[in-house]
Figure: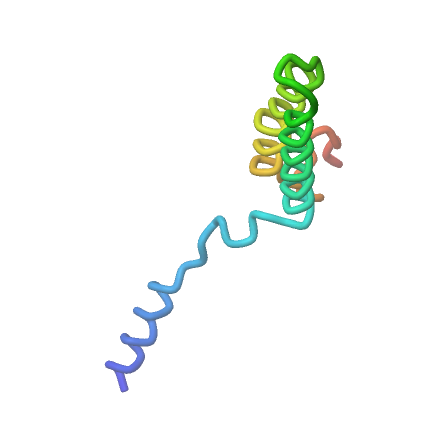
Length: 93
């Protein structure tokens, strides 16, 4: 009986939850989808006209930079604040 209890307690110690288990929420997936959509639009704009077209030389790279440098990192880093951790609310003392 004592061996079973020790084995059971060891199994509980081994089963630790990952801190990254519930990190991504619906907002993160929406931002990732928007980033992929903007990326596709950027590459599509690059295909317009001849090689010296202003759309493919100036607008398309800006759209791609926004997708790669703003939207994708935002979708990875963004995390909702918990309701109980607001520092601006004064405590009742």
